[in-house]
Image 1 (cartoon, rainbow, N blue to C red):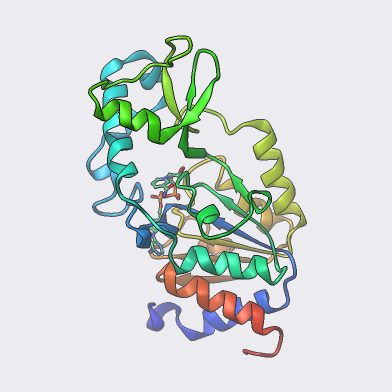
Image 2 (spheres, helix red, strand yellow):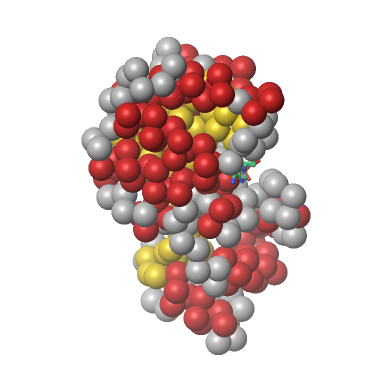
Length: 263
Ligand code: NAD
């Protein structure tokens, strides 16, 4: 943690806000899973440093078999990381177990909040899941593991076994919309919470980054935890610059200790 710039005072302020909160929303981005070994998009060494984002958008995926082959290469790479939840995921689960978590709204598609023990009704996956594939023709869904196994057996761009349509990870790629019901759920969670904590997100991807903005407009205490500055830092009641795997557990401890435990 950067104590000199954003040290104890910001942590105390955030802790005080969360200690009083009963319906906390934790909004997570790729930075929550980097400690689990999954690269984010924008950090040095992140996915964008090795894959051209323009090649991974939805339109390109549909129209260009080369783009699909590239996307399957990335899928295979991610599938074999064998990622496990880290202390940031477990901190969310602890808040839930204590009845203080309204929900996690995640931009991540890695399923690690569920692996950490959060029940599906407390996880809103804004960008879908990389654990499943969907056929863009007939809408049939199936496990990602089976599609990856086919890709590894030599089908560089495995097609739907039912209708021959294009198979794609069941994620929301650039150029696709967040499903209306998922967005409505995320907005409702945001509007009803009494503290909103954004963790490990560059807060530049829309519409997701509209949620912390909305929380701030509604007067809901906003805490931002990230390694780097974000464009929404000026809206936050507390900005903690540092590691999600350290700071989120510290915030959960403070929230669970209750008012008066800090500050
Ligand atoms: P992003 O790559 O734009 O930003 C990640 C942010 O997290 C960066 O600002 C970085 O400084 C910070 N960060 C990285 N590791 C951190 C750590 N250990 N502690 C604290 N901060 C850390 O990611 P985003 O904001 O989530 O948005 C981009 C898109 O990335 C999302 O749509 C998401 O679907 C997709 N994505 C998901 C995964 C995943 O599921 N794990 C991985 C890569 C990308």
